[in-house]
Image (cartoon, one colour):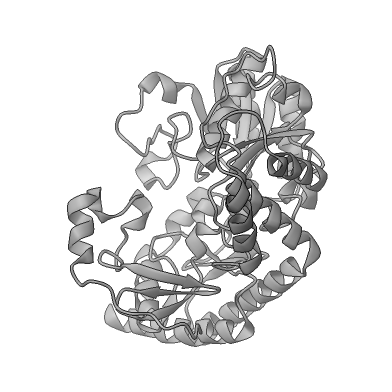
Length: 437
């Protein structure tokens, strides 16, 4: 637990937030049951503190970016030191941008060149625009349950109701139907559906989360990604690995180095900079050379904040720490322990579950297996999933109370934090079950 003292915030702050900000928060996913009036006043390592002075062990970890833990001193120091001598110019390039690009290229074998953006959504947007430009084709393939950001081409068929499977299921109003018509939705772990789509449409790109972490942790079947690589090559489509979540968290070189798959393009973000807003698009040099940052490039690429020196410094410091310290060994060991002991805990309680995850990621689905694709998750007991996480708040432990969301371990977490998670989970699940009789 943190030893830092925190004072309570103005009790009127939640009401002020509602008056000044739509819904009181700056992202739709932040207003979830049990947190409507929460004001976060401090973060520290594996914990955060709210406006009432209560400190929680944080296993949500901001959807995953702070792999090193909140406020990592080495990353924060790099940002502060860079900010003393470099600010945003909007022209030319700075030394830290070059160093970061070289570090990413050295870390990820498939990346011959890399260009920076501010968010993962921007990175996937540019990847698909680039794929359409270089192939001259219209359609893209994504997978049910996978999330690739907020832009129209991919904002569909994420967490869908049962009656929406097999149909277009956009997450928002305001998306042009003709944009959605150019997006083909296939089933994860089902190569036959991908092959059929490639044979029927002019596909520019297949974009995939190597593990669909937006719906927890649905693991790829052996050979699935190798099959995507073969199909993309055979049909002249580009293979885009969206490693915004899996990149750096599961391995410095991304999931592609775990399976030895070579995508054409890779998108990165989140754990890349331990929570600072920077992301990247990398891949084959002949493809990246078509961007307008390169003389003669015909695919427009811009962004005032691209390559902001302080953000690039955060990413550089993060990657170097991941490569020099036993970060992955630590978080993998804790993740393995959590998954194993949660499985035993639920068996003792007589609650049927599938405890899934990889490395530092874990999630408990309240259902019988198997879990191979999104359709399997329709059996998950969403009421219990959300209910026990709401009860966890009373135990001083935080996992996001939103159906299917994954939880994460950071370098700042310890075995003592895991002990607390396990004790809190048993108490929370017991209360959630008793509450509904």
